[in-house]
Length: 237
Image (cartoon, rainbow, N blue to C red; front, side, top):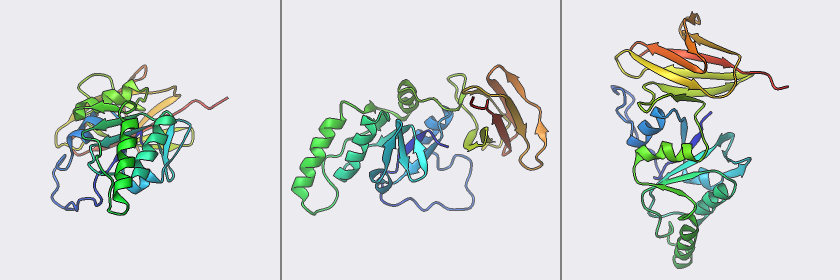
């Protein structure tokens, strides 16, 4: 489960090395801002965005669904991709835009007509997307649009750990990981009603002691260690 679809602006992903990677080595300012605010995200390609559909105020890309879209400045765009962004906005999906708007279309085929269409669609997009000037503003813009993380921080410091979310029968499972080499503590607010909260050691499956006050859970993890958080939800009547 991820709340945010984040458009990958380039045609090809970078080839990162698979060894000797220190914690946070390839984390960008945008990914840090989203993680600290508790938002889970998936990077999506231009083609995936173009072929997306919208329903129930969500952007659907294949089997995944997202409640918000983040676009970082792109200088050229397929008009069909911009049309997909318009569809998302019309369906109630908030779109956060940082950086420049495209000024021309990709490719050379029928360039003049496609450039004109890009400019026309950008004119429609400008007043409807949420424009921000820095990565730190992105989570606030998403929150102000009514989208909240299912497991978020309770203060402005933000989350120190990384979180991966999976939906399971009758609840949610979160993988919490301290990517640093130092002990860290996070206070997490669990969104929505729940029946039980269990914290488990992923290596042994044994239950770990939990510090839960209301809907706020305090978790402390040693460096480079993880925990599995299992939140069981109330059954629908």
